[in-house]
Image 1 (cartoon, helix red, strand yellow):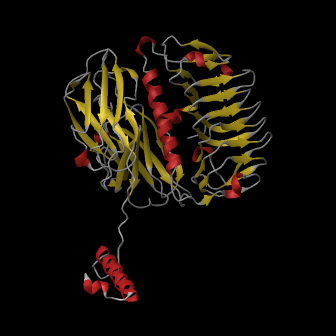
Image 2 (cartoon, rainbow, N blue to C red):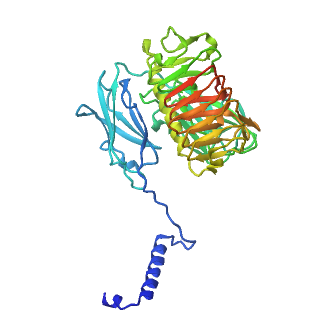
Amino acid sequence: MKIFESITQPLKLFLAFLLVIFVAGCLGSSSGSGTAITTVSTTAPTISSVYPVSVATGVVLNTTLNATFSESMNPLSITSATFTLVQGTTPVSGSVNYSGTTATFYPTSNLIASTVYTASITTGVTDTFGNALAVTKTWSFTTGTTADLVAPTVLSTVPTNAATGVALNSSVNAIFSKPIDSLTISSSTFTVKQGTTSVAGTVNYSGTTAVFKPSSNLAANTTYTATISTGVKDLAGNALASNDSWSFNTGTTLAVGPAPVNLGTAGTYAVLAETLISATPTAGTAITGNVGISPAAATYIQGFSLTLDPTGCFSTPTPSTLVTGKLYAADYNTNGCPTPANLTTAIGDMLIAYNDAAGRTSPDYTELGAGNISGLILAPGLYKWGTDVVVNSNVTLNGGPNDVWIFQIAGNLTVASATSVLLTGGALPKNIFWQVAGGVGVALGTTSHFEGIILAAKAITLKTNASGNGRLLAQTAVTLDADVVTQPAP
């Protein structure tokens, strides 16, 4: 210590500098090919969704439970000690598995009818960097009286069957009718082939969507066939009734922009809301596609004269021109219809899609026009604003049929009256996503026209004679006034 104290201050600084260099060298690569710095995350993981959802009722007796995390987790930390299920204070026997970003709890036997259960995931679970869940996640649900014996189906695919001109850097998606056991989704049950040659790739699953991502770009002008096998099972253990196969043909170009947002079963609705769907007055209203509301009941679909179908699963409006599709509500469960569970899944998928769009990183454009994009021509890409966004004169989205736009808006979105979002170059509304986080939501002015899928944390309001090609997916209410909404072509 006395020797160090006798060293002059400049020499002390020089020795400290050498120490920093030495430590940096130790942290780097010793391979001789340069210094490698390893990025370590310190962000705590979160749980983005659970099944059954919190306070769900009528849950089938042969259900399993799952929780989807915000990132990859350490599988060794996810066990029957950190993911538990109890009935009162009595533990439920079961096993736990983890795949992708989803943990699944399998009860050893069917649950008891009409009983409240509570699931917990503790702070003992950690991500791959060792970061623990910030707080224990606990949720409860109530069982019904029956088991689920209905086989899952593939509702839709991307690309669709017989699609042409598919981008060479595309992934292949399959959207299921109900949540699937993630452990049954793998490269052996979800395959893509060119003739008899298997395409190398990885398979991921979230919500109700399985995604096959090829290891490299697909070949140009080539036919591919995707297959989901009967090895795929839902959370009640029901297998797909038969293999589901579809084919598509590639084009010659790459898609520009970010990967599209997976809507899951929320993508089967033109209008989906949680608290209210109102059409006042109904004259002039024309919705092409299904309409759904949950957890609110059918009485919160207002401005439509509804007639419940004899099945009790959906209703139709009078006049029928108001909705070219079906209307679903959380209380449509006559004759054991799966409508409440389907809507719960759709709302969950809507939230997953919203979080996906909001969570995309590395934007191509930040704070463009200080939030005023009036009159601009926008290329494909990821756009981010920390403000409101306003459109006071026509804005144009110019790109090809495979290109993607994602707009992350921290404030509200307002489109002025007699103002349009226009598409040129072959751009398609199914590839345009408006994620709006503002406390008011989205307001589309009188006779305005929009294109794309709106994912709003709050309300979506269309004023008189507004129109659009897309979907209105709101976490609160959708209000219409003699408006025309047409769901995108697949």
